[in-house]
Amino acid sequence: MVGTFFRKLKLIFMDESLRKRVLFMLGALVVFRILATIPIPGVDVVQLEQFFSNNQYLGLLNIFSGGGLANLSIVMLGVGPFITASIIMQLMTVLSPKIKSMYQEEGEAGRAKFAQWSRYLMVPLAFMQAFAFLTLLQQNGIVASLNFADTMTNVLIISAGSILLMWIGELITEFGIGNGVSLIIFAGIVATLPSVVSQLIFTFDVSQLPLYIGFLAVGFAVIAGVVFITEAERPIPITYARQTRGQKQSGGVSTYLPLRVNQAGVIPIIFALSIILFPQMVASFFATSSIPSVANAAAAIVQGLTNQWIYGGLYFAMVFFFTYFYTAVTFDPNRIANNLQKSGAFIPGVRPGNHTSEHVGNILTRITLVGALFLGGIAVLPIIMQGITGIATLTIGGTALLIAVSVVLDIVKRVEAQISIREY
Image 1 (cartoon, rainbow, N blue to C red):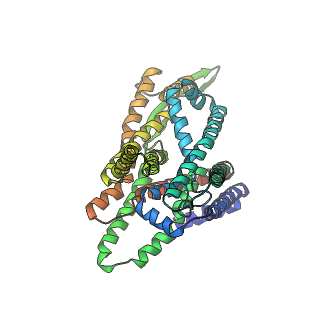
Image 2 (cartoon, rainbow, N blue to C red; image 1 turned 90 degrees about the vertical axis):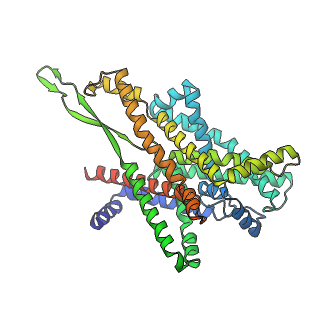
Image 3 (cartoon, one colour; image 1 turned 45 degrees about the vertical axis):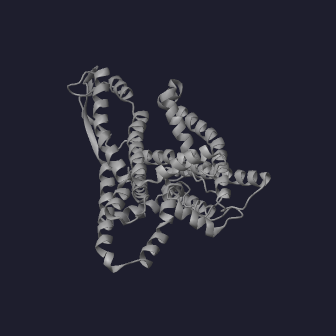
């Protein structure tokens, strides 16, 4: 195993194209980490630490900012606005047949246009989120009170930082290895590891050693489970009809169509976090309103979402929903059935056309249930463990672990695909 790893590592640096892609990805992530350390002017560090300690959902926001929010950096919004724009566009595929056709049937040109519309939508969302978050920070005394001109200047800087980060992510996708947005989120998770490890070392208590071992065992079990579910497939047997052209015969070959148990990958987690954070941010913004009814309603929403079990239930439900939703958007059984029929292939015992589409759809629905339950369960696992042990664990632990493991697996697959191409 170790020998295979070093052999592949050697092949990466021997292949010029792959080496350039890996180095470009690392260089882009270094630039991103530098941007995440540049704060906006007038930040009260003490107030910022208190604000973070009293608002656990800011830890979730910090995932999308790649650690930039903890410093109130110029990229404090991270890729959040772009993810929100992507969610809106994905929802539009359900509401608009034209957008659905563009995304699923027009090939690369349609998906490029779809991505371009997401970028356009991201710009006003970035400005709105920047203004709302900056106002919230001023209300809590974290940022000094600003006049209108200074506020708009900071809004412009924060929005530009988010747009720049989106651009860096797309450059990583095009010229690097893996999905750029996921890698930026992954880099933010990895960047917090030194502080988390040092905190565990300084607060180490020998009497809690069995509990530490238990948490470590659960962590390894989660990693193994994520790898297993991510790699799990349900093969559907396919046979190509035998064709005779002149004296030459072709077809008659049996193969299979692999359906992944987790067809949506890590996207449902990212989508669910984006949606569940929005009402908390809006409610926190209006909690200090001068109108009593608005302030009371906002305070009730904040208090409700602060409840671990309400928050966990909503989080699980959203992950479950988005797993099915994203799978339905990206995988169309009708298209699969039509492609099989056009290529002279069929599923043994199933008639071509609508029957094949229904057969594939039924199998996909059943295996997606397993993936959705697993993703939702892992996402709320830290909340469950906190309820059982009574120890305040990091509520984003399961989410961060899911994202990190999924991104690493994706990178490994892409690198292995590039190595295989080189070897052939």
